[in-house]
Image (cartoon, rainbow, N blue to C red):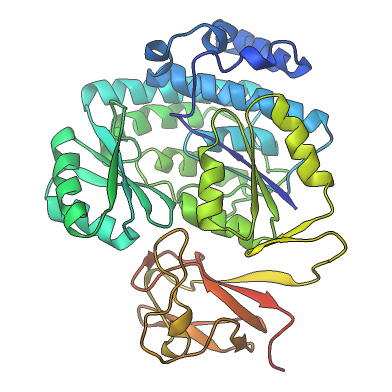
Length: 418
């Protein structure tokens, strides 16, 4: 099952449209130019990075480039069973799903970019990626900074982006290093996106959102704000408005997509950052990036291939998998604690590690579960499995603050007790 994901601001590159000029899908860029009332083809072909980095230009250019790639993939006869987009990419996902028209999507992205540029000029800020730190420790670093700084993106296990004023981010970085962050990567932006500093942009964008017609998505779209699927078109204006000042729950969104049965997640647009996050977050799912026409052949080879894929690697031709994956979700918001009997399966916050806490207690990976078995708690609420199956791994770590409906464990059905 294919899922499509779309990148956000920061993925743009100078000349990123050049490889597509001779492709039939390039006509999408011309159509979007007419809608936007400006020459977007020049932005995709000739704009230097200093021009392309400006928020108003970066968002529109990335949105249109991703739609060119989407059109090319659809011409191959490939369509998704689910969509999601990182920050700006959520608008591309909504167009891909049929929830937004190209015209309305282009108009919204234009207004969003302009509104965020103005907000960034009014309230200058910056962002930084913290590597090798758990979600709750990143949150604690922001709180202990006692300044205007917040978590902006939950990108992958062990990768969290913070944003705020320049001073606030600097203070939080110092606290994060004390809490175990292995590396800090500054992000060259002038705004603190997905934080309360974007409130002026949210107010302005909401006026445009109220004038746009949203349709029921033809395929499920997972929202940034809560990592849940929303099929009611009336919910999307509020979700997109809230997204400007709320963290992007991308790790949780990938887990939701995986939990719905996706076997291949295809990133459509410039760059390939989201594909790397797939490998770190849901390694049992294949990640494929399509940024240039040559990548279309790679995608078709992946789709047409007879090999299956598991968390431990490919299953050779001739073998077949008949298992079915499910996720156990949190019944309430709060702090997640895995059940003591299953604690030996607790996942670390790092992307490439799954380790037991070393107590010597609990069961080994592959523990059998029956319907109704308790797997942990969220606050005072018990988390119980609605399925028989084998507990494969945790999707939330001990002490992580989760929201209602967020996946906390992955199980493979068909192997449970009766």
